[in-house]
Amino acid sequence: MHANPHPLQPLLSKVRRIAPISVADESALLALPHRVEDVSANRYIVREGDIPRECCLLVKGYAARSKLAADGGRQIVSFHIAGDILDLQHLFLERADHSVQSMTEATLVWLQMAAVRSLVAERPAIGTAFWRDALVDASIFREWVLNVGRRDAKTRIAHMLCEFVVRSEAAGLGTVERMRLPFTQEQIGDATGLTAVHVNRMLRELTEEGLIERSPGILRVQDWAGFKRAAAFNAAYLHAAA
Amino acid sequence: MHANPHPLQPLLSKVRRIAPISVADESALLALPHRVEDVSANRYIVREGDIPRECCLLVKGYAARSKLAADGGRQIVSFHIAGDILDLQHLFLERADHSVQSMTEATLVWLQMAAVRSLVAERPAIGTAFWRDALVDASIFREWVLNVGRRDAKTRIAHMLCEFVVRSEAAGLGTVERMRLPFTQEQIGDATGLTAVHVNRMLRELTEEGLIERSPGILRVQDWAGFKRAAAFNAAYLHAAA
DNA sequence: CGGTTCTTTGACGAGATTCAATGCCGGTGG
DNA sequence: CCACCGGCATTGAATCTCGTCAAAGAACCG
Image (cartoon, rainbow over all chains, first blue to last red; front, side):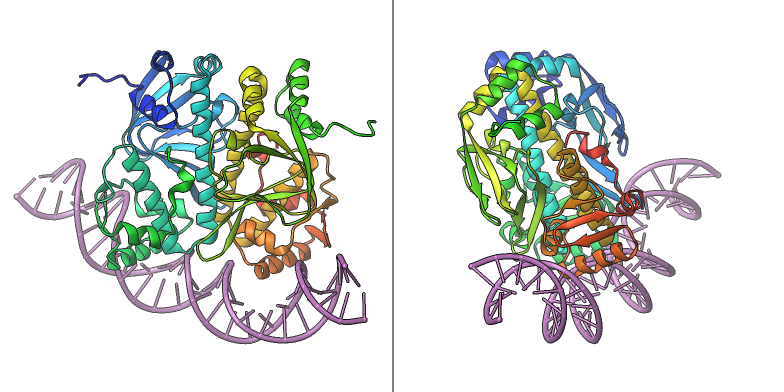
């Protein structure tokens, strides 16, 4: 019941979900030098080609990573919710290979890269947790390759929504029965490799089949078992940590 | 000019390309307990759902990671060449979320997981190199999401071939002008989310355009600049380390 | 050499895109 | 308070890319 919870609290919760760490590790984590930034929707947080000097965490709101095709097409490669680590990879990779954008108003925490490097060097349990988080990220990317490569449009969209709902519920942002869904149909299309028009048609079908119900900004899954089936969704790839 | 080079030599070369490590680190790496295994083509190395107890490296030949869709469709999510780390991720993730298969006769080196864990704990430079390698892997997955999500068939296939040629050349397996290409058109389709029939048509077009020349098991890029253009290929995502 | 796998090609069909128009909703200013 | 505006959702019609089915030819292997 803090009036001002520590800004790194969402990160701590996430790390705890990934792997247990000691009290000393927790203190060290919370002692990281950081600065908090509020951003509005649709702002660039990292731009492809940048050489970031700080690491970024998302403590409130929603964000997405995306890449641009030569023809101007956009592909969202992952979405992120409160507590997610947005670009720890720049600890070890110099240049950003993709962009990160806020999808809603969001609160970020920027960490000094050097401080994070020391932290993971001196506190192996934290290093392991971060590494593991990066591996789960990679697993999600693999699932997305499968999703856009081999599933038809309806399954693809349902799968992406399933993942969103499961991860959001794990982060305590709502329930499967009622979840905030802050994506436009165009953004869902960018994440699934489809056009907004076709996303609309497939969402209509999923709705008509009684699997989901939609109202602006809200997704209600009416039939979770059926929806997972329609999505060919198996949460194993999330490694129970996202 | 060893008659019997050390079986971990390809891994050492790879680690050196990722990040410089000390002589002591190199010795520690080569001292890892390991066992060598030769496998024939199309064998499972890791199966989705397994709980691997060893880590696997590819020191000779070619391999691919793949996932299955509910309808039986297969999606290759990455291919691997000599020197690649095939599944270091099981250091920190218990259950395999995808399969790994040999694509040709191949030589594997299996490392005891516990020994690798100690190594990365005690030798941070090696840990960093492995972590960085995992991050480059993830970057490649993101590019593949873009590739199958937003590029048309011809560009998609060309891009996949560009990546293959660049990585193979970096590993010293040939040149852009002449490279072993041990994939069937069906496998190229599985990697790009297309059917073998359509892969064939697009390869014919790329050939007719004078960009590439094909003979069984061999790819010759006739016009590297033009081919990269046709592929919308920009090697930045490889982070000069794959 | 005979069988198997891989490649190649054609005809046809399906799923997704494109183009275009309409409606809806929230915000803003007169 | 309401008219206007811009972004988003929705729908239909035409089109196109890619998939499916089928068959024949080429390369590889024992």
